[in-house]
Image (tube, rainbow, N blue to C red; front, side):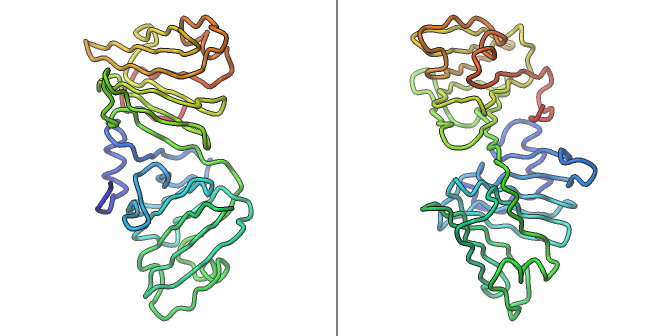
Amino acid sequence: MISSAISALALAALVAGCSSSSSHHTNSEGDDAPDLVFYLDSAPNTPTEPSRWEADAGSVHFYDDANIESYSAISFFEEEDALIFSLTKPSLVQTLNRHGDVVFNVISGDITSRVSLYDAVGPNTVVSTLEQYNAIGSGKVEFRGAEVTQLVSLDNLDGTLDVPAEISAGTGSYYFNDNANTPSVTTLIDFGADDTLNFSGVEPANIAVSSYSNNVEIHVNKDAVMSVVVIEGAAPNNTMVFDIESFNALGVGTITATDTAGASLFM
């Protein structure tokens, strides 16, 4: 659980070293790109212990997939920042001012995404609608209707050969990253066409891919550091998979590799 606020610069440094599961990438939105982008659903959170973030490094865009339940809190959210939800039009948005903290409860069906903007307005400022908040000028809250990719690092899930870590990609689009300099053992479930598995810090030639019993198994060996990823059900009818290219030809998701650890996770 992230129990203390994550500064934008500190989190960027962690992700560059592939040692954090929180997500970040820079300048992928064109000429008006923000300095930093964070994905709120990627950090552990509960209703009583939201993930905590800080928009303290230039312009920062925070993305939230409203189809995934999550609870987040953002400090230093200001004019140049944006909070962007995946929905085009939510079924319900509850906007509250709690002593200067603006709270957005976005409800999509039976799923709630709650984002609190700490000290975003004065304690007596009336904020009861999305339009009222956006008119204040303390950053923008938008509903763009675009799917939000979830970025997950496989390196800190504590999976072992005896007890692999298990992750389901059944809801939403996922970008899984595995740093070849850190050992890990992971099983991916419901990996689909909109999902990507990237290995950073290793050449494709050092990645062994095989298939068995409808599953695909990837072994990475870099200087005796081993990573193992099993993608369940990715090779139906015992389809033969023997390298990255043959896996990608299946159309059930994408495997990529980057030769520099800490390079941008988005390709």
